[in-house]
Amino acid sequence: MQYSVSDFLTDIVQNSIEAEASVITVDYIEEFPMLNIMVGDNGKGMDEETLAKAKDPFFTDGEKHKNRKVGLGIPFLIQAVEAAGGEFDIKSDVEMGTAIEFSFNLENVDCPTEGDIASAFRSLLLFNGDYEILINRIKNGKSYRVTKSELKEALGDLESADSLNLAKAYFESHENELSGKGE
Amino acid sequence: MPKLTLDDLRKLREEKKHEIEKRETEGKDIEIVIGMGTCGIAAGAKDSLEAFLKEIDKQKLKNVIVRQTGCMGYCSNEPTVEIKMADMPATIYGNVNADVASKIVTDHIMNKKLVSDHVFDKPSVDIIKK
Image 1 (cartoon, rainbow over the protein chains, first blue to last red):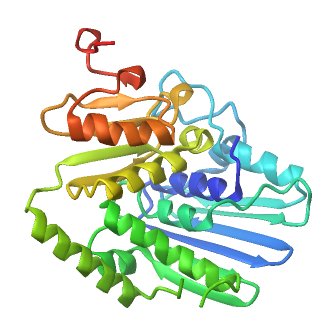
Image 2 (cartoon, one colour):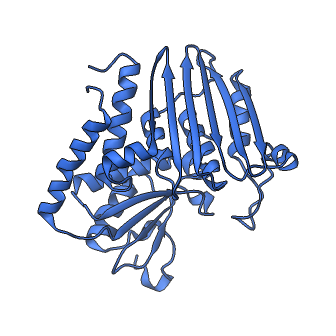
Image 3 (cartoon, rainbow over the protein chains, first blue to last red):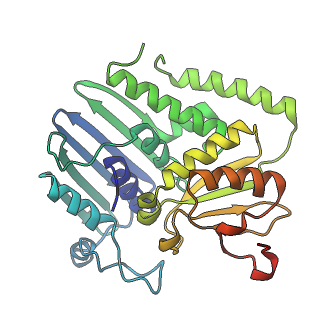
């Protein structure tokens, strides 16, 4: 079971990578006490039948792990959302992509901690493959947005420790500003 | 910390690049791949990632690249990490928490010595000395 909202986000985006998405959008929007997260991708998508099964913990497409009978990413998320009075929605079309939207009420006692958002955002950039990702972050009226290609251009690469530490510092500084801790 | 702009990142990265050039022009020939699927994340792979980056920075290693992948299929041994480098067998380590991550950098990568207790797959058993 994932520990934090940030962990759920990383998990869901990893699904998009596995679905061979070339463009992924992440909206992470906090209007206290509600936290709404949307992840959209242009990956291979799922038909209605597969989509229904994706919510079943005892289903996996079996392509990666021949002997594994579980797929827990989405079921874990649904479980956490339901326990904390939030909402979950998933839409998908074959060859078009998948959109997942989930929300938490941060005041609900069963809401998971948000976790390290800066570290989660950096993680979204580090999966294998040539994909673009747009992160749109809004917190109580303040916002920032950045793409993977912008960060890669600024840093030269997204695989050396120097670049990855700077990428985290970038997100941390923006998060601090949104929380009124910056400057 | 003041808010970093993309321009700030560019400048900071340039400064680091000069450091690299001063040292040596070695290729990035050491690869760390961290499993970041449902299982890896739940087992704390993000902490391991952070620990690798901190140790690489601390040891001032410039020829290491760090990547993430999905589930490697060894869910019960997460976080799992694969290390590929010259002069060492490609090795998958299991149960790599932050401490083990630092040890992998200093022992495996810097001293070319396996962290035997955490070797999960490959190389064959006769190479591993307890």
